[in-house]
Image (cartoon, rainbow, N blue to C red; front, top):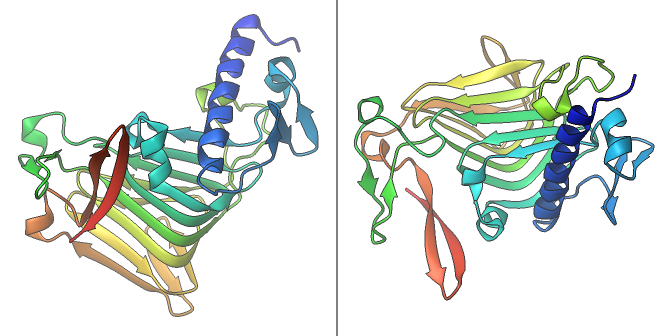
Length: 263
């Protein structure tokens, strides 16, 4: 079936976003599906231009919220190491985020409902200021992933109902982390295997998964295997505004350097 001009334009725009995501993350020592000279590889199909891309679909889906930067110099300091395999999906609707040596094979979606903090005074407690910097802090969701493997079946790339430029896709499985208010999710040295379910954290709560083997999330709870340690804790009152950690921005000439501040 002939693809309409409108759809081709939309798909071409998405291709530009995927190319930008490749350029950004590959500079962070994150192994991505091969791309060279503007050519993307999707399974065994070379996508040499937007016309062919419109009929074949992208090699991966990576959608990053502008608040992660918006400057690439800032975004690059929040990511380092790991890999994103062919056909994987990464959606980050979050600003306070740390990726260190994460291997993604499947779909991972992280959504902070307050990406940059509260938009109404009555939604949250009042803002505070970071120590010694004068930077105003608004309570917002945070996610920290270190030495983590995310494994699931991800997107059904063979579905005829997928509309990639709308990010309307059919999935077999996905890890979806939803952070309300100032909720936090942190995982270290774990394998996250998710049979199509979501982790929902309410305002004032934090979940930590640390040195272990595998964590399997189910829709109504969390089950641990092989010595897994999982804690679901309330955030301390003194950290309600600032969170248990935040990025401190420092200017050095014309450059911006980020420092991870932990309490």
